[in-house]
Length: 111
Length: 113
Image (cartoon, rainbow over all chains, first blue to last red; front, side, top):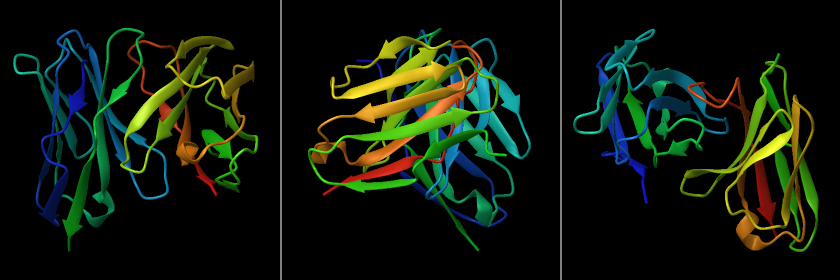
């Protein structure tokens, strides 16, 4: 069936560097995408979302890029900080169908 | 104030027991959800309610019965608990079902002995 996945299960970056977390999706009909951050013992925390009519959206220190041609989604975190260490999930949706989560990428920030 | 709150945070019980998890949101959202996260961190939707009506039931065993007394609450009752029910259960809510982010509670860790 359709699925959302991540290229890298773990990512280690130096503090202050930029991080890029990638996500591939297989359903070309998906029209809404979300990135979540999950810290240990906490629930997924909304970071940023993007609709399929956009290819880029920026937030505070974060940027989401959507490439519909190759069905690829990425989350860029600028000047990565120790507090950014967490598991990051991409999720995709079509209309009012359920949100489908990817497997998650663990980001470790090295001080 | 916590936007989506679940109780209890931890639940340890024996196989065969019946237990409930409660969820409340103070965001004014009209759609609420239950998710299950397994030991590999995989998150999967179980149920979704919109204005107290069930709209999504993702092939969850009948032992799981959600109840929504009002738009701000969605409880989950589980009968005859099994070892495989051990997981973290997350409640979430959103304003509508389309193009709206879901906001999650901090989860209930259920451990079956």
